[in-house]
Image (tube, rainbow, N blue to C red; front, side, top):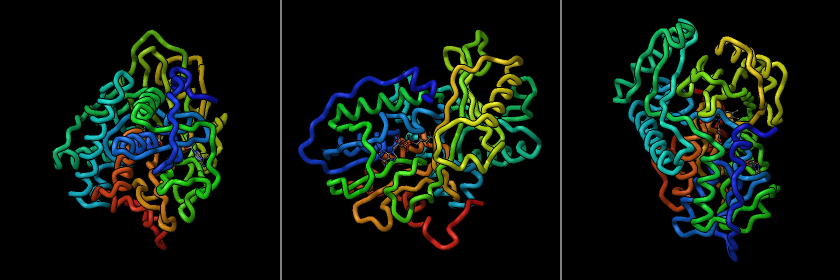
Length: 378
Ligand SMILES: Cc1cc2nc3c(=O)[nH]c(=O)nc-3n(C[C@H](O)[C@H](O)[C@H](O)COP(=O)(O)OP(=O)(O)OC[C@H]3O[C@@H](n4cnc5c(N)ncnc54)[C@H](O)[C@@H]3O)c2cc1C
């Protein structure tokens, strides 16, 4: 089942690049692997990216199309967890990378802002606390009430966020990487690191189990997200990405009028911790009736699909050297927020491989996942 995004933008064949020697092998041709490959190639290294499927066919071409600043946890939780200074640094860095992504993505990214909705009184209180923390640290964000005709009591408008056509973003970046000399090998599953001759290897597979991560394998938990796309409708109901119930519901309207909605994982939580990329009737039905309720009438569903993302218990990315591997690095575990984080962490891991590790990476250290009682976010 292909996503609507991938059907809308199937990508064009990449120029073939012949390399007699390879300095870095990247496994995974999603936003992370491609971002890393671009940085490494621009630094003069010979880079090959391999994927079991085609470029962008993992979560990078199957997601909700939200490009949000910040991490996977609410900002006030990040402050509690990381300390105010580090949390603010983290959020600022994601804002910078969102700007950089916008500069590279062209018309595949629209700077619409996003709406973080509260569905009930408890969630209103939660987002009120989050917005206060953002304002205290100098970040923007606008309080709204009675949103969507009063259906939602309150929301935060994050004015800098964006709606993307994620498949187009990743295909564009891949074109840029190929232009910088990166070789892409599609349809090539790597079964073992021993197959790869390069001095360094980056495993950029997020939630898809690669079998290449040694003792980290499975600690970035494969988690399924399901989506639907409807027929186009004439009314423009949603100008920007909307998400509520702690991100369990999310939707946007594409420029051609379709509603793309995802989530409802909490309707069947246990069954969704899987790497099996298929849709299920329970969640598909929940998505369909949610969209019918939002729009005020049932809409024909034209596309259904699933994708896998990597969930980490403390909601922080996993970026750095694989603890028990001498030449292996990893970047992934964005807990469902990989569009900007994947682009950012791909670049950060590449810089670390080049010897310039960003200070934030100490908080993303993969080794933390191996500690006894490894941490869970507050
Ligand atoms: C339904 C859904 C909705 C989402 N919505 C959003 C959203 O709106 N905003 C947001 O920011 N994030 C969202 N995410 C998360 C986001 O899509 C991902 O975190 C991000 O795309 C991860 O990118 P990546 O490049 O790290 O991995 P991926 O794009 O998943 O790519 C990993 C690739 O690794 C390949 N691979 C795995 N093992 C091997 C191997 N052994 N050999 C060769 N290849 C291998 C796979 O084939 C795959 O193509 C969503 C995810 C899903 C599933």
